[in-house]
Length: 544
Image (cartoon, rainbow, N blue to C red; front, side, top):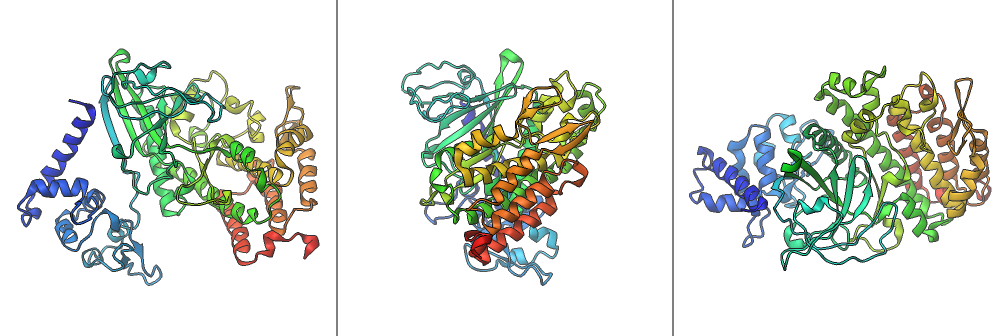
C-alpha cells in the first residue's frame, strides 16, 4: 500500500469515527457524509467541510456541525468577516453567501465566534511516507545555487529515497519527478518540482506559479525537534500574517512530508512551498524599466509597509514558539556561551535581498508593479542548527554579511530583534538606490562608495564602522543618502523614506533604533500619503 493511500485511509477513518457520534444521527448514510466532508460534493457544487469541522471541534461545538451543514455552510464560507467591529457584538458575515449564519451568530462567547474569522490555511497536511513510496511530481528545471532558470532537464522519476540523490533514474512509465538543487547549504536543500493539478488542492493559500512549479525544501537534519521548530515557526507566522492581512508577504508552507529512512534510523523531512520567480536581486535585475518610474513608488510604499508587517509576525511569533521550547536546551545548543538564547532566537536573523522572494501572481496581468515580495527563510530550525554547529561566539554567525548590524562586531554587543531592523534598513536603502541609479549604481557604485577597512583591516562594504568599540553609521552612507535625496527623481515619498532609513532604521546604537511596531506606523503613514495624494510620490520638492 502506498504512503499516500495509507494517509488517505487514516484521515477518512478518523472522519468516519466522528460522524458515528450521536450528533450526526440525522445523517443515515455515514459513508456519504464522510466523503462529503473530505472531498465536497460535485453534484451540489459544495466545498469540503474539513476546515469548518476543525474550527467547531477546536471550540468544543461539534454538536452544532450538523446545523451548519443544513444552513449550507462549507469551507468556502471561511474565513468569515466581522460586519461591524466597533459594536462589541461581533456578528459574522459570510462573503460567499452574502448573509449571516444563524448557528455561528448564536455562539455567545466572542472568542468562539472570532475563530471563524481567523481560520488559517496553515492547518496543512502532513504525510508520512516510506522510502519506497513514489510521489507524483512531473519535472521542472534544474537549478544550482545562485543560478536562474535557464536550462531544461530531462524528465525523470525517482522514489522518495532517490530524491536525496543528485542523480535520478527513470522508473518505467510511472508518475514522473525531476529534481535539481536550487540552494544547497548546511541546513537544507531546495528542489524545484512540478505537481500536476490532479494531485494538489491548495485552494487560495499562497501564490501559485503560472507553470504550477513548487519549491520542495529538504531539511538536512533528521532530528524531529529541528523539524518541529522549523514548522512551528512557519505556521505561527502564517497564522499571524493572515490576521494582519500580510499573508501574501510571508512564505507559506503548503504541505509537509516525513519519509522514513532506515539507513539513518530516522526520517527525512520536507516542506512544500510555492515557487517564486526569484528573489529581490532577481527583481532588480529583470525590471530595469521600473528604474526612475515614479509611479512605481506607490507600489513600493505598499510593499514596504506589508514587509514590515511580515517581519512583525516573525518577531511576535518567536514569543509564542519559545514558550514551548526548553530554554535549557537552547542554552545547551549554544555550547555554554554567555548569551541570551531568547534574544538570539527572537529575530529573523538573516534579512537580505536573497530572502525576499519575488512572486508574480498568475491572476494579475502586467505591469510588473503587480508583483509581490514575500519574506522567507525565518525558520527557527535554521537558527538552531546554525548556532549549535558553530564553535565561535554567536556574534560570528553573520561575520561576512554585508547587511549585519553593528552589534555583531562589538565585544559586548547584544543580538536582538533590533538587529533585523538595521538589516532591513540596509535593504530598503539598496532598493531606493536601485530605483534611482539602476543596477550599476546598486552593484558597483554604492558598494565601492562605502567600502573601507573594518576592525580586522579587511575591506568591508558594511553600512557601519566601529571605532574604540563604539558603532557609527559610515559617513559614506550618510553622504550617499544625501546624494539620493538631491537626485532629480527623489519624490517627497522617497525623501521622507530616506530620512526614516537613516535616522531610525540605521541608528548605530541598537537602543536608539526604531521598534518594528513604530516602523509599521511610519510606513503606513507614507503608504496612506501615497494613496491619498499622487503628487506625494510623483513630484519632487523642487517641482512642488
